Image (cartoon, rainbow, N blue to C red; front, side, top):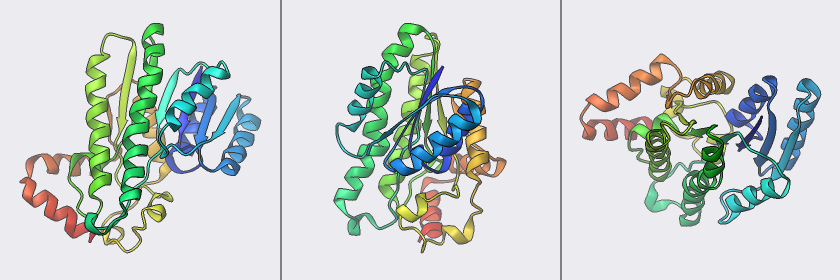
Length: 255
């Protein structure tokens, strides 16, 4: 059995790789940082006696998802579990943001995720087995002033995952959307969000615990994975409070 994980060089992706390896899965790990991938490859192959294939790839570049798929085919690597974890955010007013950065975010968070799912899904369906884990966010349940495009991309990921879970109900293939709150990873450095008051209002979750929760929900075939009771309460509140209040509350938290 083989799991393909994008964004595997750090954070949730790295911890998921460790969990899969511990359970005996061979791995295909894709991320930009080859040095980090090679370090993880050595760790997992030594500790768990599994085969780990790494590929340095930037999935925010158009065509890179096809490149990753073609790589697995050329190496005769059969994928049983697809983990679409790679993603990034940007903390700024949309009017002041870099268009190129927003386009790269959409390409990575939405387009590459969709393309990889499209490429591998026919194989899963033909085998009548397979699992897909798409890493979304609590952000997927609400609008996010000062991170408008990021929140919108995660809303796509969750909606897409939920819809697929119904389409694939009798196919033997499951789709899970992992929707954590803020997690302690280098995501926030890349998003340039250090000045956000978010850091004053929230306790950041441990990436190991979030990965373990997502992993367990994936293996049970659950559609949504929302770690922590407090996160689930936040999601519930976004459903019952007036939308005008929700979007203004998020702005107050993030500004």
